[in-house]
Image (cartoon, rainbow, N blue to C red; front, side):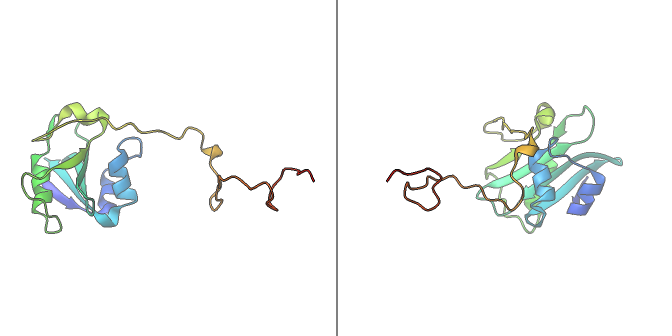
Length: 154
């Protein structure tokens, strides 16, 4: 059964980490005001949480599975989003469906045209980041600029 959810319900029912599901995490943490959320619950067990991001030039879905070792068919969740009054999703339109790599083999998405793996980079040395509020500029100073650090010959 597909149930509507809000940001707080997703956070409490299905804590999702950045590394676990990058796109869904971003929709929950950063783009909640533009996202619709739904949960697939079967016999009291959370099977999946999905989101639809509004305002994109294409239909953007994301999904995270929670039911251990079970395959998942997304048709029912897609139908939920299709029937939502805030979504203009006619049958036959194309979109992007982001699924974590660990879940990909277990998910069946009807009408898949192609499949690509998205590579993400992980920040391994956060101490190298500039402090908040510091702007890094990369430009060349003119030789006669009063800001030049080079000693000029006369």
